[in-house]
Every structure is written in structure tokens, then in C-alpha cells.
Length: 63
Image (cartoon, rainbow, N blue to C red):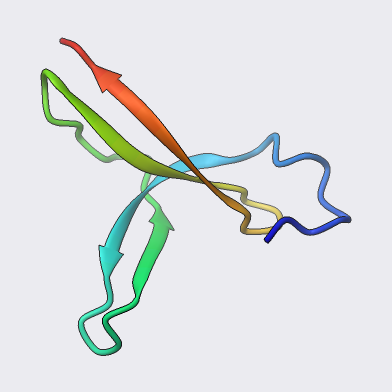
């Protein structure tokens, strides 16, 4: 959930999503070095570095 004191999530970075093996909960973390599969559309979390707000974005990696 977005923090009202956040400056608008302008510093958000893409991350990866994974299932926590102990709890089974869907989690996300910032990972600026992720490699996208070629020719695929990927659903990736965009995470604010200030408040942690997460928005899901579709990345079209046509190359």
C-alpha cells in the first residue's frame, strides 16, 4: 500500500516475484539485474524504494 508521505514512487525499480518456500506467500524484491526471456511478455513488480508500494507492469521483450 502506498505511503502518503512518499513523493510519488518516482524512484521505483523493477524486481522479481517468487513464492516463499516456507510460507507459500507470493513475495517480490528489487532485482535490477534480471534477465528477461526473449520474445516473451513478462509480468514484473515495480517496487518503490521509498515506501515499498508495488505495481505490476507488463514488459514486452520483443528482441
